Image (cartoon, rainbow, N blue to C red; front, top):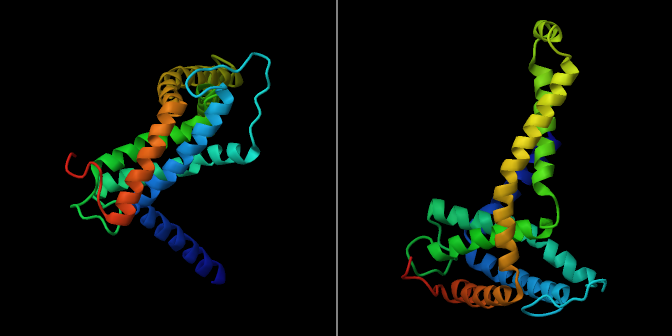
Length: 228
């Protein structure tokens, strides 16, 4: 009984938190500006320049762990940004409790969704994500297939092909199809993420986010209130 009480409270706290995020797009825009600031510092040091890549080959790139952690922490902020933007559009929720407009600020919602996706993909730009997704999909398909095929059918299949070999073929085919498909879509999202984290663009995002966030959160108005 005590466990159920704590379990109920646990999920209720999570629901309250996500409800607050959905109603606080203005706050999330401010936090997004702070993450864009970490992009600015991270990418500038990594590239060796504000606009061009000047870091010499063989020169080891060093950056403080604190700045790296903050940049990777953008994954969580990105998820919350996407949630705030999507819920704002779907439920027509104002971006702050002081907002003077009617319903959601569409520009802010769209901005949060796009930048949120970029934040989510930025730390994994250097990972073979498409291949990882393909391996996961292939493994799940092979396991599910092995679990759901009745024994009698396995006997019939064994007369034509070794069941283990069949599972390997299914794994390879599914993994290849998913990896090839995901490579295109993931590549597009990663390209967007790299563009938005380019120092000049990150600087613009930082300035806009801070201004827009302060206006929404503190004054209840939006730069683009009457445009969308």
